[in-house]
Length: 240
Image (tube, rainbow, N blue to C red; front, side, top):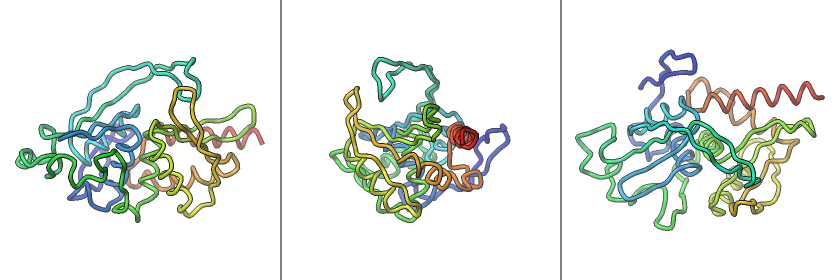
Protein backbone atom coordinates (compact mmCIF):
# COMPACT_ATOMS: atom_id res chain seq x y z
CA UNK A 1 0.00 0.00 0.00
CA UNK A 2 1.21 3.52 -0.80
CA UNK A 3 0.05 7.00 0.13
CA UNK A 4 -1.18 9.72 -2.21
CA UNK A 5 -2.62 13.07 -1.25
CA UNK A 6 -6.40 13.09 -0.90
CA UNK A 7 -8.66 15.99 -1.79
CA UNK A 8 -8.40 17.30 1.77
CA UNK A 9 -4.57 17.13 1.65
CA UNK A 10 -4.51 14.15 4.05
CA UNK A 11 -2.61 11.06 2.89
CA UNK A 12 -4.81 8.58 1.03
CA UNK A 13 -3.79 4.95 1.06
CA UNK A 14 -3.80 3.48 -2.44
CA UNK A 15 -3.57 -0.26 -3.02
CA UNK A 16 -0.78 -0.62 -5.56
CA UNK A 17 -0.37 -3.81 -7.65
CA UNK A 18 3.02 -5.49 -7.73
CA UNK A 19 2.79 -5.43 -11.54
CA UNK A 20 1.07 -2.41 -13.21
CA UNK A 21 0.17 -4.68 -16.14
CA UNK A 22 -1.63 -7.34 -14.12
CA UNK A 23 -5.38 -7.49 -13.55
CA UNK A 24 -6.02 -5.12 -10.65
CA UNK A 25 -8.38 -2.15 -10.04
CA UNK A 26 -5.46 0.29 -9.91
CA UNK A 27 -3.82 -0.99 -13.12
CA UNK A 28 -7.22 -0.91 -14.87
CA UNK A 29 -7.67 2.73 -13.81
CA UNK A 30 -4.12 3.58 -14.94
CA UNK A 31 -4.48 2.06 -18.41
CA UNK A 32 -7.93 3.56 -18.86
CA UNK A 33 -6.31 6.96 -18.35
CA UNK A 34 -3.45 6.12 -20.71
CA UNK A 35 -5.91 5.07 -23.41
CA UNK A 36 -8.07 8.16 -22.92
CA UNK A 37 -5.41 10.87 -22.72
CA UNK A 38 -2.03 9.21 -23.01
CA UNK A 39 0.61 8.03 -25.40
CA UNK A 40 2.71 4.88 -25.39
CA UNK A 41 6.17 5.23 -26.90
CA UNK A 42 9.37 3.22 -26.94
CA UNK A 43 10.36 3.12 -23.29
CA UNK A 44 7.92 5.74 -22.02
CA UNK A 45 4.25 6.20 -21.24
CA UNK A 46 2.79 9.70 -21.00
CA UNK A 47 -0.63 10.50 -19.60
CA UNK A 48 -2.33 13.89 -19.20
CA UNK A 49 -5.02 14.89 -16.69
CA UNK A 50 -6.43 18.21 -15.50
CA UNK A 51 -6.93 16.86 -11.98
CA UNK A 52 -3.87 17.12 -9.73
CA UNK A 53 -5.02 14.46 -7.27
CA UNK A 54 -5.67 11.98 -10.06
CA UNK A 55 -2.16 12.65 -11.41
CA UNK A 56 -0.74 11.87 -7.97
CA UNK A 57 -2.73 8.64 -7.80
CA UNK A 58 -1.45 7.55 -11.22
CA UNK A 59 2.12 8.36 -10.16
CA UNK A 60 1.60 6.30 -7.01
CA UNK A 61 0.49 3.34 -9.12
CA UNK A 62 3.20 3.47 -11.80
CA UNK A 63 5.89 5.92 -10.69
CA UNK A 64 7.04 8.73 -12.95
CA UNK A 65 7.37 12.50 -12.81
CA UNK A 66 4.50 15.02 -12.92
CA UNK A 67 4.80 18.27 -14.87
CA UNK A 68 2.23 21.06 -14.42
CA UNK A 69 1.33 23.72 -16.96
CA UNK A 70 -1.67 25.72 -18.15
CA UNK A 71 -2.94 24.95 -21.64
CA UNK A 72 -5.61 26.28 -23.99
CA UNK A 73 -7.35 23.88 -26.33
CA UNK A 74 -10.31 23.74 -28.69
CA UNK A 75 -13.57 22.38 -27.36
CA UNK A 76 -14.02 18.93 -28.93
CA UNK A 77 -17.62 19.48 -30.08
CA UNK A 78 -17.04 23.01 -31.38
CA UNK A 79 -13.57 24.03 -32.62
CA UNK A 80 -14.56 27.72 -32.46
CA UNK A 81 -14.62 27.56 -28.64
CA UNK A 82 -11.42 27.34 -26.61
CA UNK A 83 -10.93 26.74 -22.92
CA UNK A 84 -7.96 27.19 -20.62
CA UNK A 85 -7.25 24.70 -17.87
CA UNK A 86 -4.50 23.18 -15.75
CA UNK A 87 -2.75 20.16 -17.21
CA UNK A 88 -0.74 17.62 -15.24
CA UNK A 89 1.44 15.42 -17.43
CA UNK A 90 2.79 12.22 -15.94
CA UNK A 91 5.76 10.69 -17.74
CA UNK A 92 6.59 7.12 -16.84
CA UNK A 93 9.84 5.77 -18.21
CA UNK A 94 13.24 4.28 -17.47
CA UNK A 95 14.27 7.30 -15.38
CA UNK A 96 11.01 7.53 -13.47
CA UNK A 97 10.11 3.97 -12.56
CA UNK A 98 9.36 3.14 -8.97
CA UNK A 99 12.08 0.51 -8.88
CA UNK A 100 15.25 2.22 -10.07
CA UNK A 101 17.20 -1.03 -9.91
CA UNK A 102 15.10 -2.34 -12.81
CA UNK A 103 15.31 0.85 -14.89
CA UNK A 104 17.69 -0.78 -17.34
CA UNK A 105 15.16 -3.51 -18.10
CA UNK A 106 12.91 -1.14 -20.02
CA UNK A 107 9.46 0.17 -19.23
CA UNK A 108 7.89 -2.00 -16.51
CA UNK A 109 10.58 -4.57 -17.22
CA UNK A 110 9.53 -4.93 -20.88
CA UNK A 111 11.50 -4.29 -24.03
CA UNK A 112 9.80 -1.43 -25.87
CA UNK A 113 6.05 -1.86 -25.99
CA UNK A 114 6.21 -5.65 -25.97
CA UNK A 115 3.95 -6.99 -23.26
CA UNK A 116 2.08 -3.70 -22.74
CA UNK A 117 -1.72 -3.68 -23.26
CA UNK A 118 -1.30 -1.89 -26.59
CA UNK A 119 -0.10 -3.30 -29.89
CA UNK A 120 2.16 -1.76 -32.53
CA UNK A 121 -0.84 -0.16 -34.27
CA UNK A 122 -1.90 1.63 -31.10
CA UNK A 123 -4.87 -0.64 -30.41
CA UNK A 124 -5.48 -1.38 -26.74
CA UNK A 125 -5.99 -4.86 -25.29
CA UNK A 126 -7.90 -4.79 -22.02
CA UNK A 127 -8.59 -8.48 -21.43
CA UNK A 128 -6.41 -8.51 -18.29
CA UNK A 129 -8.74 -5.93 -16.72
CA UNK A 130 -12.03 -7.69 -17.54
CA UNK A 131 -12.88 -8.05 -13.85
CA UNK A 132 -12.31 -4.35 -13.21
CA UNK A 133 -14.44 -2.75 -15.91
CA UNK A 134 -15.67 0.04 -13.64
CA UNK A 135 -12.18 1.31 -12.88
CA UNK A 136 -11.16 0.89 -16.52
CA UNK A 137 -14.16 2.86 -17.78
CA UNK A 138 -13.65 5.51 -15.09
CA UNK A 139 -10.07 5.99 -16.28
CA UNK A 140 -11.20 6.26 -19.91
CA UNK A 141 -13.93 8.76 -19.00
CA UNK A 142 -11.52 10.93 -17.03
CA UNK A 143 -9.07 10.74 -19.91
CA UNK A 144 -11.36 11.57 -22.83
CA UNK A 145 -14.86 12.04 -21.49
CA UNK A 146 -17.10 14.88 -20.41
CA UNK A 147 -19.75 15.27 -17.73
CA UNK A 148 -22.11 18.24 -17.87
CA UNK A 149 -25.51 19.54 -16.87
CA UNK A 150 -27.63 20.33 -19.92
CA UNK A 151 -29.53 23.40 -18.76
CA UNK A 152 -31.84 23.45 -21.79
CA UNK A 153 -33.10 19.95 -21.00
CA UNK A 154 -32.46 19.65 -17.28
CA UNK A 155 -30.50 16.45 -17.82
CA UNK A 156 -26.99 15.13 -17.19
CA UNK A 157 -24.75 14.51 -20.19
CA UNK A 158 -21.94 11.95 -20.31
CA UNK A 159 -19.94 11.61 -23.52
CA UNK A 160 -16.62 10.27 -24.76
CA UNK A 161 -14.45 12.09 -27.34
CA UNK A 162 -11.25 10.82 -28.97
CA UNK A 163 -9.34 10.85 -32.25
CA UNK A 164 -9.13 7.04 -32.15
CA UNK A 165 -12.39 5.61 -33.47
CA UNK A 166 -11.32 2.08 -32.51
CA UNK A 167 -10.84 3.07 -28.86
CA UNK A 168 -14.34 4.55 -28.74
CA UNK A 169 -15.80 1.41 -30.31
CA UNK A 170 -14.08 -0.62 -27.59
CA UNK A 171 -15.41 1.78 -24.94
CA UNK A 172 -18.92 1.27 -26.27
CA UNK A 173 -18.48 -2.49 -25.89
CA UNK A 174 -17.36 -2.03 -22.28
CA UNK A 175 -20.43 0.09 -21.54
CA UNK A 176 -22.72 -2.47 -23.20
CA UNK A 177 -21.26 -5.14 -20.91
CA UNK A 178 -21.50 -3.10 -17.68
CA UNK A 179 -24.18 -4.10 -15.11
CA UNK A 180 -26.38 -1.03 -15.67
CA UNK A 181 -28.50 -0.41 -18.74
CA UNK A 182 -26.84 2.47 -20.59
CA UNK A 183 -28.06 2.95 -24.18
CA UNK A 184 -25.82 5.17 -26.32
CA UNK A 185 -26.10 7.39 -29.35
CA UNK A 186 -24.28 6.60 -32.58
CA UNK A 187 -20.56 7.19 -32.97
CA UNK A 188 -20.22 10.51 -34.84
CA UNK A 189 -17.51 12.83 -36.10
CA UNK A 190 -16.66 16.03 -34.24
CA UNK A 191 -16.04 19.41 -35.88
CA UNK A 192 -12.35 19.05 -35.01
CA UNK A 193 -11.95 15.78 -36.90
CA UNK A 194 -12.25 13.28 -34.06
CA UNK A 195 -15.11 11.06 -32.97
CA UNK A 196 -17.58 11.05 -30.10
CA UNK A 197 -20.66 9.36 -28.65
CA UNK A 198 -22.85 10.01 -25.66
CA UNK A 199 -24.74 7.91 -23.15
CA UNK A 200 -28.48 8.56 -23.48
CA UNK A 201 -29.58 11.33 -21.12
CA UNK A 202 -32.14 9.09 -19.41
CA UNK A 203 -29.43 6.54 -18.59
CA UNK A 204 -26.62 8.97 -17.68
CA UNK A 205 -27.54 9.37 -13.97
CA UNK A 206 -27.58 5.64 -13.28
CA UNK A 207 -24.45 5.00 -15.36
CA UNK A 208 -22.53 7.89 -13.74
CA UNK A 209 -23.60 6.83 -10.25
CA UNK A 210 -22.43 3.26 -10.90
CA UNK A 211 -19.16 4.50 -12.38
CA UNK A 212 -18.23 6.48 -9.25
CA UNK A 213 -19.86 4.26 -6.65
CA UNK A 214 -17.56 3.77 -3.63
CA UNK A 215 -14.63 5.35 -5.51
CA UNK A 216 -13.56 7.24 -2.37
CA UNK A 217 -12.80 3.88 -0.73
CA UNK A 218 -10.10 3.05 -3.30
CA UNK A 219 -8.96 6.58 -4.22
CA UNK A 220 -8.98 5.59 -7.90
CA UNK A 221 -10.74 8.65 -9.27
CA UNK A 222 -10.41 12.34 -10.07
CA UNK A 223 -12.13 14.30 -7.26
CA UNK A 224 -12.94 17.23 -9.56
CA UNK A 225 -14.74 14.90 -11.98
CA UNK A 226 -16.71 13.22 -9.19
CA UNK A 227 -17.74 16.64 -7.88
CA UNK A 228 -18.86 17.67 -11.37
CA UNK A 229 -21.02 14.54 -11.64
CA UNK A 230 -22.54 15.07 -8.20
CA UNK A 231 -23.31 18.74 -8.90
CA UNK A 232 -24.82 17.89 -12.30
CA UNK A 233 -27.07 15.26 -10.74
CA UNK A 234 -28.18 17.74 -8.07
CA UNK A 235 -28.97 20.32 -10.76
CA UNK A 236 -30.99 17.76 -12.71
CA UNK A 237 -32.95 16.81 -9.58
CA UNK A 238 -33.66 20.48 -8.84
CA UNK A 239 -34.79 21.02 -12.44
CA UNK A 240 -37.35 18.24 -12.11
